[in-house]
Image: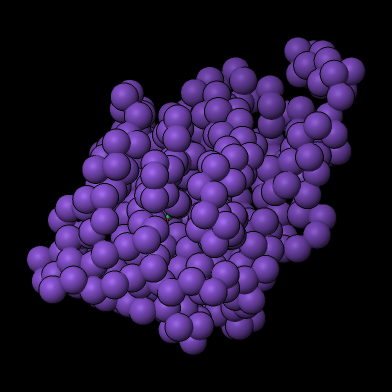
Length: 369
Ligand SMILES: Cc1cc2nc3c(=O)[nH]c(=O)nc-3n(C[C@H](O)[C@H](O)[C@H](O)COP(=O)(O)OP(=O)(O)OC[C@H]3O[C@@H](n4cnc5c(N)ncnc54)[C@H](O)[C@@H]3O)c2cc1C
């Protein structure tokens, strides 16, 4: 059976749902197909950066205050050294993935998005999307099927080189958040990030190159953190996923466009993944309405530029004790620098606001630290 659809979105994760909502806002009909049934969970640090919240707001997607936790900034901790910077505008918001999914699905239904759950897409051609139970014709096809996207492969948009993977394992602990910022704890070979969550809970995620490094073993490298979590009840089963820096030369081909993790990823330690997909949804919907995919390709590149740079910087910090130690000591001694980097990270300040003289000054201080 062939069903007509103006925009068919493959993948009903956060990226796919928000893409469909944005398409509806542009007056397009949107159908989302997902192999699974809601609410859909996924290993994630669950922190949404201010620019992600701002993008959702532009689409009138507002979360009830009690659904999450507004976090005020980021803290880096490395042994005895730590540096904290606060967001200067909107706060970040952490929300459990199950809750996030349910909220987004509810909002999408309200604005008229059509969902087909349990619909695994098995192939596409230039006009149709095929599932085991039928095929859907499309005017625009959006691949939002995650980091191992098949739409990307079928559309010939995969990059030739496979990205180097890291592995993240996540869980939740019942303990009152001890801080109003998201913390990144650094040690040799791994990072643990702590996200304050609603309901007297914290999210804990470890990221490393070792696919066998689970939280229990990783926490031995962070005795102060292990102490804080020692008495706390673990409330969710640990689950894991890969993360990588994957940059695609193009995210559109003909009437097919990729969004979210399908369209490239940055390392999870940056906390950018969800926000990127929410920011991408708006120009993608505009591009479909304008019949101008180049508009989306250009916007996608602009939106990804800072997160890609931050991903490289943070990976360099993770890969070298020398760089990390110096950087965090410098951030501690020069809080203005860390605040400026955070403002760039969250797009409150453009990258171009740092002049060459300032870069040279920071480089000099870095060497002297
Ligand atoms: C350890 C870890 C921690 C992270 N922490 C953060 C964080 O703190 N903040 C943040 O912003 N980001 C974080 N991220 C990144 C974030 O999780 C992703 O960027 C985000 O989930 C991407 O959403 P998505 O909708 O693109 O993909 P997904 O959430 O993977 O959704 C893809 C959907 O497509 C469906 N699908 C796949 N194939 C098919 C098919 N053939 N047919 C039909 N449906 C299909 C799947 O069922 C799924 O529902 C983290 C990632 C990891 C690994």
